[in-house]
Image 1 (tube, rainbow, N blue to C red):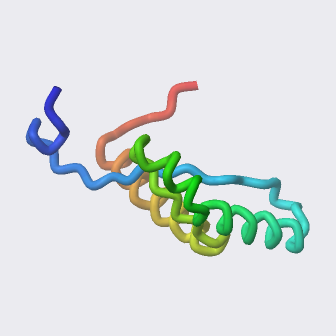
Image 2 (image 1 turned 90 degrees about the vertical axis):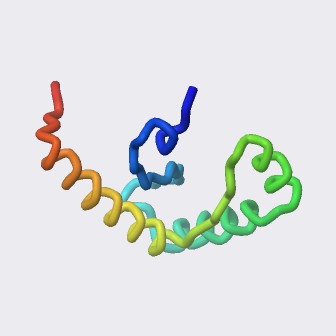
Length: 89
């Protein structure tokens, strides 16, 4: 099966995953989770387990992740509007 580029599609997309907490989560809890998850993402054994799966654990701060989410939402919302994609319910 060809890649998107080999098939002639000019696609610039990144897949990501993240940890979400309820909006009302106390800042101290968010901070502790953030620091622990960032620490874990840098552990050599975690990196070694994820690499064969093609996964790179970045370990962004919650502020950085919020910016990524906002940028992706704006980008893909525009793609959906330009393509006349509608959500079916």
